[in-house]
Image (cartoon, each protein chain N blue to C red):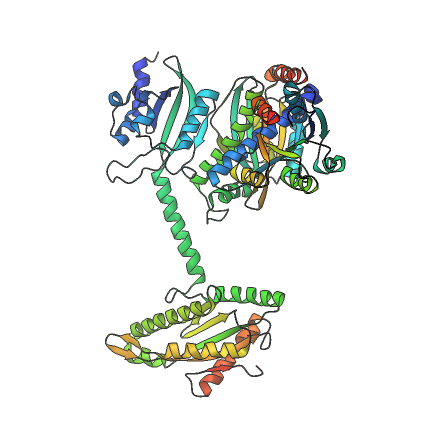
Length: 205
Length: 311
Length: 120
């Protein structure tokens, strides 16, 4: 079921994610008046069990981040995921605050939601635009949880297609590693297939 | 079955600004909340463009979000922290800026592709956070500083002294520690009262701080250990002669009179100097050496600086 | 420069990106000779001064990035035309590219931009 996408299709998605993340970096850099480098070292297409294992291995239990739903030629939910104590660090690196990580800030949650929003919108819009398809995104929501309940929250069925994207953020000489996860509803997977095949045909023609 | 008017009534009651614009940014809906804040009612707002109503002072981030919303159906959250002035909104009573966040979502309204803007007033949150931050800053400061003089306290001094020892070890660069004890302070307290004593302490602490700042720019630390005992950490010292030169100068600065209620109060200082690494490589050793040197200075007649023995 | 056969070096770790560029180049100039490399060190291994007229370099690659690769190629060949290709079009990167005398292409690559680049 992970083999739902062939190598060519996966390669297209990798490139489109790279473009989406690259564009998000340039939007973020305008907001922070500083250099923002985002790179995508790895993309994996997995099922929910594997995703849980991935998270459990690579991220500490407490996670925080942003989720948003999307609908159109593909539908599902997208998430930006950080180890919890570093999520607000991203905000503080960008906004430049004096508060320490454990100090609560409502406004900073708001800001984290926006940063995730910009990143996820960029990736989803790039996918749609380049494949000449339509997509719609919903408002982002900030969340906190652990690797189990986050995935359960995002996947309402056990057989969703999960695309895990590892992202490295470099801001002001600091490095942060986070994940983008795209949970794509299988009933929209065939639409995804067709769009990718069409694009590939065009490339070879 | 709710009537159309029922929904309209609900929108009118919402405690959030609601604006709907079409692709040309013309106002299709303008709720009472936003009308109250802007002083522009719905009939005046309808069919004008957003740019026109807000006098073309809309943050480009909002314009971009609206564009992405109508062209690409993307929802956007615009947070106050990243965009302090999305729209020119002001408190109706005080004319202070009204801090706000905006949510933008694509919607179909009156059969047109439109954008829904939800404008939330976050002024209370912003104010609360400003107070919280100021309070935390105060707490942080008090934890490390003496409340009377504003000088560093013993805790901060110990931390900085350790850091300085480590740095000196790493770069093999000496520094000096000065123990400053005020002469005749007890007399001032007894004769003129504690208010006078506190005042003198404050003045002398300021002089100490300023003298240090002039000498060593931003490095160095002035601390108060308690009573009339102060300590100076001097990182820009090459040898003990330099340290003595500074200490002598400091003595003269502190010996100058202090004006208090038409009295001229005079308090001097006895200063003990200890050098890293000769008189100690650890904070404790240095403190002891400087303390001993200070007693030597007192024994020798006060109002002077003395280096620790074996300098 | 415009009429002779163009010898072009494409460096990008993404197969699809290389395919896309190749496709767009062929649309403009069917006779162009295209050589591909997937990474900076691979490109440097293939590279000989004077063997290419134009190099299109992806910015974001594992190992050395496009700007660093451009610098190393420029050290060996002062004639070759170098173009940085990236989705991350922020000022700091553009400025660095321009100060090195590099042209710039934003991803996804616009067919028109590429065409005018090739023709000039």
